[in-house]
Length: 222
Ligand SMILES: *Cc1c(COP(=O)(O)O)cnc(C)c1O
Image (cartoon, rainbow, N blue to C red; front, top):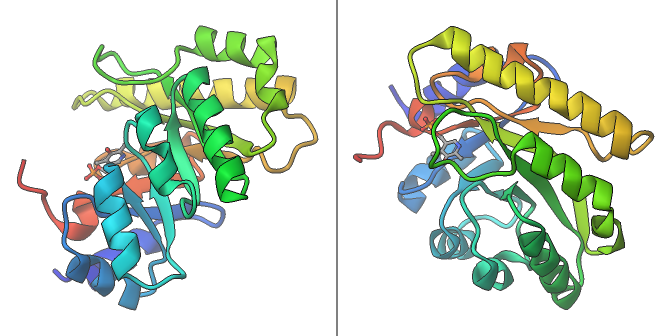
């Protein structure tokens, strides 16, 4: 199977309103170029240095999405060009993104990462922490940050009922947050959930952005 065929195959399963983030982490620029030539424009990376190096080598109309855990001291490297930061998991990080957005002279679109999986190692706000942060309201004073929605990962398990339940929890929380804090704000519209093994379920539970890596580029060898 070629990258081009894999992309086509994934795209045929996406309903209108669901966009594909091709997760290209650890793959060489040649692989990304192949995906680009097949028409793919949104790429997801999880390491700041790697994304920045690829950004410098590849066409300028690519939308770079940062999907990994972002350290505050590295925001400055991606602030000038990143199109969406999926994994904002603290107010401190949001503050730094605002600061670097101001320096770069642009508003940076972000998603708040929620922890809904059972694994303890995953980053993210609990729904309670996220609700509290939004209620406190200081985020409203950050002009260089635009909160566009939520992101989450399901547990890494074969139990698809559990996976579905976690996505459903996230979907319900998304609707609740939209109504309570972003009503009338059309920019709050993205729910990033679903990976190679579970994205069809994520779509059924309301995903608007699926982050698919190995199904497109093959295994990453780890
Ligand atoms: C690596 C990664 C993906 C893609 O995983 P695949 O199983 O290869 O599709 C999606 N989201 C995040 C946050 C990742 O780190």
